[in-house]
Image 1 (spheres, rainbow, N blue to C red):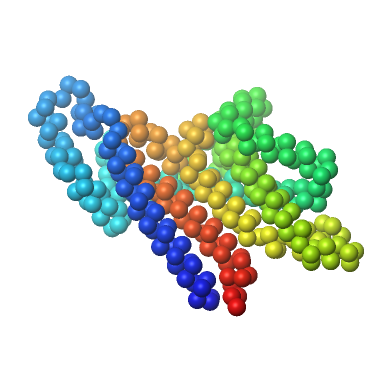
Image 2 (cartoon, rainbow, N blue to C red):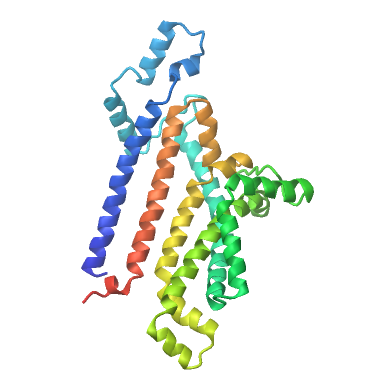
Amino acid sequence: MTFPLGKLIVQRVALGMTLLLAVSVVIFMGTQLLPGDVATAILGQSATPEALANLRAELGLDQPLVTRYLHWLSSILTGELGTALSNGQDIATSLGERLGNTIFLAACAAAIAVPIAVALGILAVRFHGGLFEKSLSGFVLVATALPDFFIGYVLMLVFAVNLQWFPSISNVSSGMPFSERLEAVALPALALSLGVLAHIMRMTRAAVLSVMQSPYIETAELKGIRPIKVVRRHALPNAIGPIINAIMLNLAHLIVGVVVIEVIFVYPGMGQYLVDHVVKRDMPVVQAVGLVFAAVYIFLNMVADISAIYANPRLRHPK
């Protein structure tokens, strides 16, 4: 690794850590500004002022805001996420299983979307200006415009209610066989993959088309090389940087943007966990889930930036 490349990567990592610290401030302050009172939500409206004051003192709510933030941040840095107020369960333990479920769902969606999107993007370049590309463009516009919840409900109606091929509620457990787990996440994974597929396909098509205008591509075509081989062997390797960047950004969307889909299919992931505890006004859980989502999103964006840097030959081999 050359020094300029290493320096750029260190800068991206430092920027990601700084951004995560700033996001932690926003998450903590945002939860504190929410209307209502945690002690009242726990004890109920009939609680006495003395009981409310004692609970606030026990939860540390009587301390200054900055003190509470620094205490929360120090606990996060030591791996201590605290205890849920609503059920007394350890948040880190609950998040571990939920995060695993969300990553599994996102991985299934990515396994569907990424290879199909890249293949369709290459075919769109191969048949540029033809009926096939125009049909793909129409599909992309429709898939991008439709919200996730609409796609989820349509898939549930068709494949779960009418055809009864898949379950409408995606229940998974730690001891479930892999085949049954795949069947359970089929519909939410398909719902998530459609929008991501459209974005990756557009980026693949745009990146490869940009490379196709290069002089060496024209030289390869004049040599009589088949068009699909020109795209696959000469254009695609030089367009891989923007494509990897688009894939990583959409993977971040898959993990962070699962809230609506998980609620629709009652999937026991991070999104469902967050919504359940927002309703209960369980602020420690909301803060922990928000920070984990932010960390995953920032990390994947950082990986996308580093991948784009590494894929640039001028940064790998500076003069």
